[in-house]
Length: 348
Image (cartoon, rainbow, N blue to C red; front, side, top):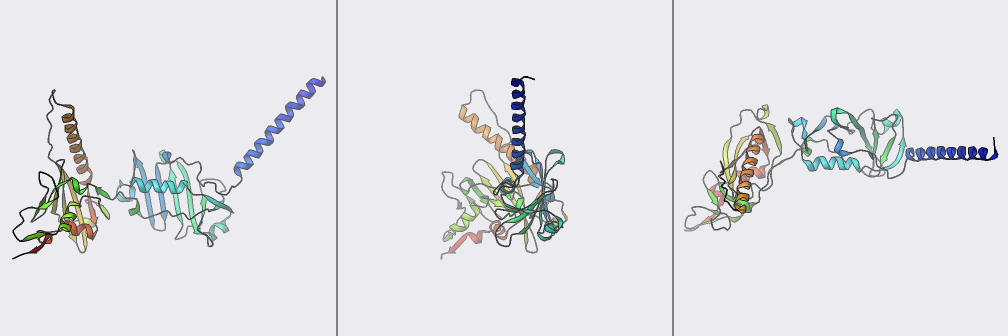
């Protein structure tokens, strides 16, 4: 073999050895713990189809349907997008302070295995229930805010201490979309109760009590309360309409509230012991809209908006007709206002 060929072979061998050593070094760096690294660095939240969170007897199962999640424990009632996004964001932002170790004894000491009363287990699955992540949060670090955490979807996983405290709620109510409707009081055209009518003048202005007698003065604060009933109307608890918890309830109309766009809502109430329940139904003045070829563009836009709103009311009723809502005392008091409550004083 010539000297040139020998030198060439030596150079190739040296390059191969250098490449191999570089690879081993890079693998070593990848496996080596680095303070501040993310616990779920490779998780893509868009791939998550099912989320299960449990602690003790509490359990929440969130399943993706189209562009939102549903709460399985509440007969697939919609989950709040913001609460699910917060949960996924909190998981993605878990940073690690240090690697603690491995082993059954350490798991037991740190409340990870066996599962303790305060151990939180989180499972994430993709389409077809394919497991993506299974992890547990154990005890809180005695000398700081971190938690001990470990994955169980990996082989021989290490236990880590998180950089900061991780708070994952296992309360079903935390994840429910509790907002029923949200219409500003300025959009309300009238509120009709059992013995009163509050309406907005045709020429505009504030809501006012109709048929006000001489000497009567209204409580503006109570009128304002009526006008704000649909502003952020929320519930505390939800039941499917045929659930045993709400069986036999008798609902009576409480308020009819109309909006300036011709739509509105009828709110009916029932009471059992100290708890108030609500049923809500939407309504619309629009039955059909006639369109002619010579209509102006603005008129066409207005009619399109009316038809869109009518479809929204139909969808609203198709969904909410299947549910009964438990509401807070404050909300119930607003729905129970009478004409007497609206009168400030009587003058002789």
